[in-house]
Amino acid sequence: MLQYLNCLRLLTAASLAGILLAGCAPDPLSPTVAVPRAANTVSDEARALLPDPNPEYVPASYKSKSVGTYYSRMQDQLLTSGKLRQDLGRDIPLTVDQLTKDFVEIALKNEYIHGGSGRMHKSRDSVLRRWEKPVRVFTVFGASVPPAERKRMMASVTSYTNRLARVTGHDIRMTSRENANYYVMFMGEDDRMPFGESLKRAIPEIDTAAMNVFKYTPRNQLCVAVTFRDQNGSPRFAKALAMIRAEHPQLLKMSCLHEEMAQALGLPNDSPTARPSIFNDDEEFALLTRHDELLLRILYDRRLQPGMTKAQAVPIVRQIAAELLG
Image (cartoon, rainbow, N blue to C red; front, side, top):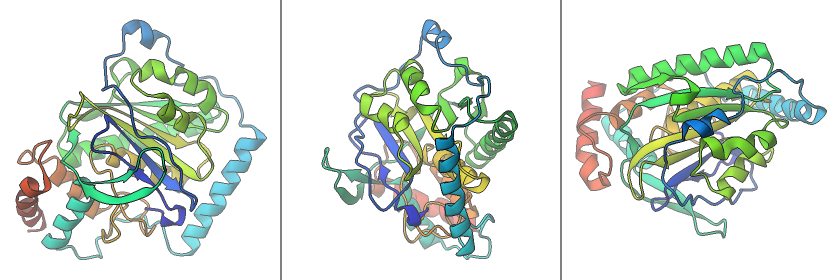
């Protein structure tokens, strides 16, 4: 979504990690996607050194407040133009052919950047990727996030996590810091730099370039998610983290949450023909739609397996789509 921001989707077939950038401005960024190690276990000693996920509140700086004003104006402009719908899109008809095509474009392809050049290439075929192990979600807040907002976003993450579990049928639930493999972080301008210094303790396999995406996030980037595979070349995810700007007004914040958490389950791309969908750069929908729920149900249907190619998956996807649409 958010063509207004011309988002880059970065997930390479050969890399161990995928960086998903939601909401980039017309001048594209050129971060690397290479993370040289697969996800691994964090020791108890390292976990004890992790930053407080619910630190004492420190009021936001003038810089952070200025960024918040910028995003509030952005949201107002999108709403004024009739964008960021919050319904499920039930008024828009779906067909088996369209749902199958959208699944292929969103789940079975990669948009990628060539080396360090920053040049965007067209999508190329990939394999089906998803979580096989349970997903355990944990929220982390920067010090600049007010206590009332922490409570509100904690409830939102919990509710959305439960919804994703119902839709996919996969074991997805909230957890403690000690058992987390998916970190959802709400960070302001004042928070990311100090937290970035500790990020490697929670995600020891993250490389410097990926870590810098969090620490030095430019204003034209709304949110970011990174996924890690369970081993070299594996189509199975083992760990993920998402960073959502604390300065966002509520709808943009929820839009980032819905898109990043769903993408990190195995729907990394956008399609200009997907409708009604948040996986579309036309900005029409802000929140997960009926169409998107169906994509997730297809992705986690046990008839599909991680590593399936397009040729292997499409006949099964079409059959599942026909069943779902009745």
